[in-house]
Amino acid sequence: MTVSGLPNRRHIIAAMLAATAAKSIQAQDAVTIAGKRPMILHNDRPEDLETPVQYFGEWLTSTEVFFVRQHLPRPVVKEAEFQLTVSGRTARTIQLSVSDLRKLPQHKVPAVLECTGNGRAFYQPRVPGVQWGRGAVGNAEWSGPRLADVLKLAGADMNAAYVTANGADAGVAKTPDFIRSLPMRKAIDPSTLLALDMNGAPLPDLHGFPLRLIVPGWDGTSWVKWVNSLSVANEQDTGFFMNPAYRYPKHPGAPGLPVDRADLEVIEGMPVKSYITGHSDGDKIPMRSATLRGMAWAGEEHVTKVEVSTDGGSIWREAQLSSQALPFTWRLWSLDWKPPQPGYFTILSRATDSAGRVQPIVAPWNPSGYLFNAIDRIGIFVTETA
Amino acid sequence: MKRMMMAAVFCAAVCQGADTASLEAGKKAEATYCVACHSTRLIDSQRLSAAAWAKEVDKMAGWGAVVPDKQMLIDYLAAEYSNTKPAPAPATSGNGAKH
Image (cartoon, each protein chain N blue to C red):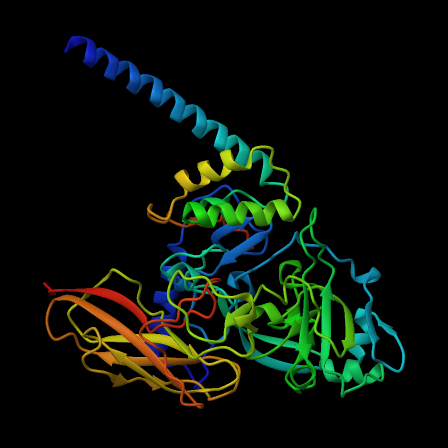
């Protein structure tokens, strides 16, 4: 998809190159995930799948390559049997079917979904958890009713502090259930949805069929899948997935040192971040003009600037932002570059957002490896043309 | 001298045997006690210190994993998936898309 208007020759060539690169990802493993192209396989049961960076480059991430994170075995929900129950501090308890939810006003929100632990593998010392590289992120169009409209149907107390969401997935043995509480101010934001569709089609099982919470600008942990229960409450849920999981230190800590549980707080929003996606680390390119490409995103803010260095950070140039400054989605960027000589070049990208946040050189280490957002880096070999 | 060398060869063979046996026992424990909830891929991709592995095994035991010999499993994980070893190359799934 071209966001900035009609595709030009360069766009078409870039798309062809991207398609070739994507095809070159060969399956190495006997495990195949229905509905997914070859993905980085962190866990096959339940499925934890990372998007290879070669698949990025489009504004929307195709569902076939969109990353998957599951904490518990994936439930298979039958649409005919599905009911969403809304209860707690409400005038009445209501139950809604998929067709009831489709009858409500439908809204479409494009938004980046990023796993809280995306980039965990880059922290030193290493921390336990899925060892995500750069691909636990994607940008999709989500559609369905607003969470606020569903809460109004139940006569919810809009002054209550939280809306707690639970899905059809359940823990094995004594594994805690995956339950998340969302502050009311974010729950009633017009962009917060109960999505039935992802990229124009019903949500696949892997992505939460038939109903998923969409919390634009917040970490993936808030985006509860297979949602079948909403409870309006003044207290936050006390389960493992609200505390101690998915909490971040209030104060920066030293790498490897433990953090007191009382000094952790719930993550709200996401940091500013950018990727270089048009080339891969170690690529060899001929010594002529090249276009560097990538994307940048910033949680609830929007990206205002992407700077790129082709010399390891001595000189930075501003890249061209090729898509609209919408909240919650990423912006594609590009920069033309003429290598000055053959050799090895360290390419860096650094984004700045509307709140003035800038990507750091070193992402703050934290015990669970959340919110990695250091400046992106690849190395390219420029070879003498014959 | 000859006797010393023979002793060294004997020890190497026996120690090697013991290492292989505990490695096999550890691998079997991992494949038996950890897979009720998740595949072993989730374990094999980690690179952690012995202390961090002990914490993980305790956490899983708290969540219902029944591990008869926790220390044996911890020792195996700490040796095989040590933070002193490089991370493995990521595996890639097959093509499950229609095209």
